[in-house]
Length: 434
Image (cartoon, rainbow, N blue to C red; front, side, top):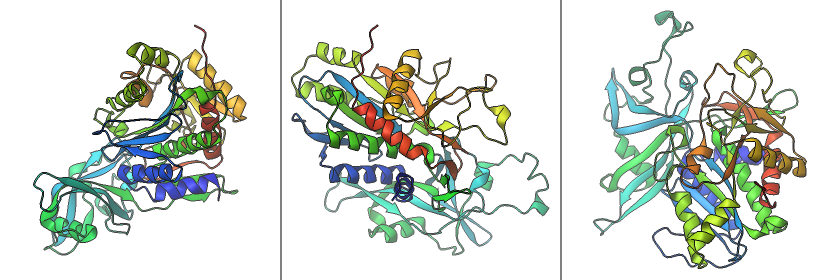
């Protein structure tokens, strides 16, 4: 099975950020990693492999080669994607039809959500029997065509193709039933196999039911929901696992870190986001577990490197003027190194130079992205995580079209490129002489 097909299968089985992290957990356990809990004291051992999860939606995995490690080699990506989150008390009833009350999560292209088969996935928070203040999380995925947001016919909306602005509260009401006695909590209880009164709350999202696919004359393109950023989360994980398995190269003197944060699409300002102390806490606990001082920790940070991996905009053949005239990456043409003068990305001459050498060593092509100077770009994980853990960092991604659409497209070849480059990164000794 190709790397791209494995990616599409991973995304298919990850309809929410919680499912994505659970699937990553499964891969780590199959590769001999042990789970740590944040509410226990860690007793780490040299040469062992570990992971820790926060909120069920963010995960950090790592290996410690020896107690005298020199630094940290890290990648960071994110588990969330733009969607619609279901509100509490969501039933909306009108004209014999029941719809759900939802709100935007992240900045998305809204129109492609109309007229698609949708479903629901996320988690339920339920109370444990016999214990007043003990709660557990249950993953749910309806995994069937359950809802749709029908468009208004062109006859009733003549300006639909002339810049119609969508009223999210009024128009984005996914239809779920024609039963006026419909109860959303009852539906959830049946799906999860619990009693209605046991459900305290939930974090549930709509997701597009389209399956990932290959397309193009030579099947050289892939399309799937959530390529931003599960493509990077998955490919960096594969590179990480390959490097750990091989246990070779000069990178053996560094702690290898693979991090996947949540809530990047809404600013990362959460306890499981890149702006949280999750990475800071984890690195400190690793350092302290081996009796190392704060001075030794700071010295290790000075010898560390972070690859912030979040997908990049490919030049669009129908909108070439939106791209920079020179630095306009294409799909299937390699890993994208991202620059921004306003420091929306962390890449600079030093960090980009380091990553270019890594790509060359891995025999992987790379390309450059900069924004059209008249268009403000978005930000990503690198600078946000650096506010907590300051290290040399580069921002990279894989080129894609239709970012933040419920169905995005990218190049089939680029998946393997990223896996190879990240494996090489984790096996490299990075030394910058300032």
